[in-house]
Amino acid sequence: MSLRTLYFSLFFIVFPVLAFAQDVLYKKDKTTQKVTLLEITNRIITYKEWGDVEDVERVIDRRKVTKIKYQNGQEELLAPTAPTRLSRTQRKKSAEEYGRNVICVSPIFMANTSIMGVGMIYERFLGNRDIFSFSFPVAYSFDNENSNTRYSTMLWMNPGGRFYATTSSGKARFGMGPSLFFGLGHERYSDWIFSSQSQSSEFIEVDQPVFIMGAMANFSLNFQPSPKLVTGFDLGLGVPFVVEDGAARGTTNPTYGGAMDGDFPLVNFHFKIGYRF
Image (cartoon, rainbow, N blue to C red; front, side):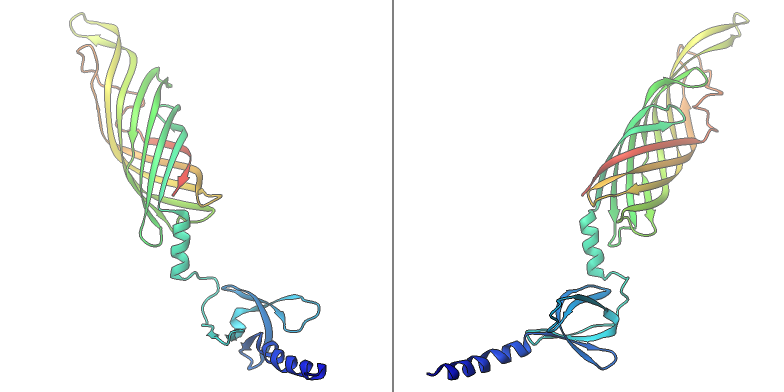
């Protein structure tokens, strides 16, 4: 076989492959464009023009393309979907990346019964869109003196719900919702009481158990620099419905003017950091 015959044979074998080894964009203006596709997203199509010696990457709005014919001969019709709206599959994938459970510790917990405390928060997201959740904060406020020379040690439980208008998955999310709250602990203070027997005032030391129950409005601001890391703040404003206490040393003198009065609004604050999975 002569060298010329060999060249012609290779040309007729390779040329059809080169001619069809390309992608084709079919545009809305009825024109076509031969390209090498690099990336297709919800908004744009990135490509290089076929035969471009400068090898420059170019971009076209996906909405301007009706069909793509790939190098292997397969064709894809592009539906006119909104580029900024995620599909159901993409929303599900995003929710899976962020997880449905969050466990946080609160190294800083404050209440109007005590400004010193620690806590822990468990939150479970519900439904496919992750806009609702069940939250269960638990906190312990330490024994410290308040403005009325009273000392209180309390265990707080605050089960309730949260609503996130823009879903809970994202760098910064705000949520709110109602909850119940329960407080169980002790209050210690010194006080003067009037004795009917001696017809005089006596100075006593009181150590009494306290139980509080009520309703609370909660506000959460979550920062999620990654799908696994969560930090932020929780603020709760509540009104007690039940306040039960009993004075020590056989007296039934109720508390007054202090943090455990039944008409005081309860305030809880958490600074939290945790893990989402």
